[in-house]
Length: 506
Image (cartoon, rainbow, N blue to C red; front, side, top):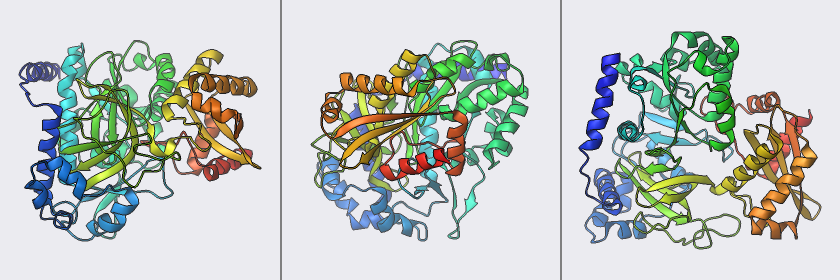
């Protein structure tokens, strides 16, 4: 595959050199919205909201925003997507062959997100752009000669009574890989279809010596567990003892920083780490330049983005969307401001609030970072703690106590008339819970004035419980949330964290 690797590398460099894009971000997005509306104008949704009239307007984005309401999952599913499971051309032409059962971290039941052929093509298109942008990195040609290890949820899809197949989006994507991709893709479709996580992990550890991996992709918590299993099974010191050409890791799903130290410990050399934003609703962004973990928004891949300020202009104090929130397009965003993301896509997703909050870090390159979830905003008594702020406090605690804390959970619990924050920290190293409690409390008060004010009023204190990774994985198994692309919440509502604590007390 050496010749093929050289060809791929040369092609990437050539595509980068021949790029003559003269449109600005707003023009790209206007073009994408027009394309989406044109394709869906004869669907039930398109006729109901008169897409043809929107297309004839002088300002297509403004008219679209005035005509089509904002949808959350519950509303669009009840009104439209349930019909899309039965009848064709409800929100997008034709009938989806797949529905993605979201492995997200909010809600009591799994969500079913439509996955159309055009959606699959969009994901591939963004992936192709990501490969093209690898020209920005000083990667050795060898990387393009090696195999790619991708850790998905099970690719064994279930057939619904209405005829479509369903599974998690990563499993759907793997099941739709073209046959030629089998040359590069590991662990391969056979292993990827193993439902049982422990069995799949064991097979991967056994087969690992037969592979020559140059790049890895997957959620860091589960990738880390698999790599450790490979190291243990094969009596290695680092993963590079078995995969010396491993040079690129494409992370995603959760913030990487709390896992960085753990990855460095099991690697024998420095690797390039790229972030990706691949949700059940689409492939939205990826790291396109070196020396940053920010991600370039995919502005021209059958995706249209809108942004709701994650402040008083868009949400109330408890994090609920206002009845008439301010909504801006790509030409109106501000650097450093936090937004909730709305997407319209070729899966028949219209002005859909994904639930993630983002921040633009670079306006010239349209780069973003994910700051958390709208529902993971810990603000029960005005503490206003985003996932990003919680991550930062955990990183500081990890450094201060010289321990690895990859996973954690926090929630607000009530004692009589007052609240306190309950933290559950996961580590296999010795950690003094009382000392860590005081450290986290002080760090958050110094970094966040709203938290400090809350601590002087209704938020009377915090509690810290330290558990092992084994106990944490036992909890995930009990919740049927272990393996593949499963994400677990960092902020839990009171009912769920009480259930978590009861499990730990058993």
